[in-house]
Image 1: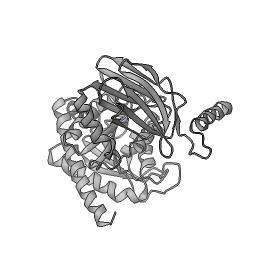
Image 2 (image 1 turned 90 degrees about the vertical axis):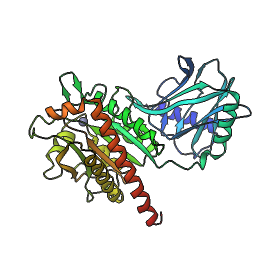
Image 3 (image 1 turned 120 degrees about the vertical axis):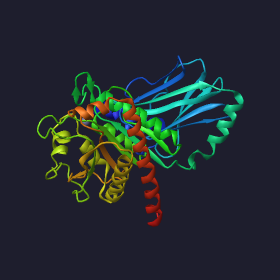
Image 4 (image 1 turned 30 degrees about the vertical axis):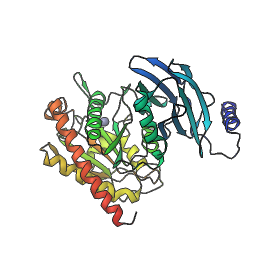
Length: 385
Ligand SMILES: [Zn+2]
């Protein structure tokens, strides 16, 4: 094991020819490849941990450039595409590694996503053909200003709870993992329609994504907001719970400690998130949110609730809940766990399986996020940030 790690670092330093470079935080978790498939040219890069990345096009010569931060790459992806003439790895600034694909024909980026997997994460890029003129336009637009591009209002990371071997709550043929994935994909679309949000998912398939990977994905994506989406089962114990409920961390959580303190009287959170071994989303929230973020998170929860109530969506009798979680690390990502409803409630089950309700709830969450983003911007400008 130690030998393998040493070999890995050796390759990393050999590649960059520099000692003292930041250590890589991730390496390939399988074969990276670029190949022709139905729908376009697919680049897949499986990695052991999510890392920040960016992609753009450049001209003269026409090429696609993908940068990864903290990724030790010992060789370029396997080339199985007729549209690509050559692939090369270069060192970029700092601890960034650059993958350059020299194009035989004008291509454009159709899809680009890093999502969680059982072994870490994977970057999926899909490229489609375009005209030479459109390519030149895009390359001109993207090559220079990419670093200064005004960020859209917010990077939102949606975290569909559970997945893979962990189906979450179940009610007959319905399970929470599938419902939350469907809902998150819809919410992503609804948020992107506004042109205001850059949206990432911690998983876009029915796969199990470990808690750490969900958190790392949010950090790697430079998330401004993290929304974890659930519809848990409260049949055991206080079975009467129903309606949408928002969970945030208490402002007085103790920083630095690793254990999770149970919030007094927070039966739902205790049952749902602390005693369900596979579902430690509350811990994820604790890891993402530092104390200084608490007021921004409180505003997020308040705006989400306001929008949900305005759209007449059924909410829990105590819709905003907090618990005193210990904070793993100070981070700066306002985070809310949304229980859209409870699969153990007949009324909620009917709502949660209705496409109309999904649309209504997604619209409401979008409205809440837009309201919050505006308030948060004003707040931060007021603070001189
Ligand atoms: Zn859940």
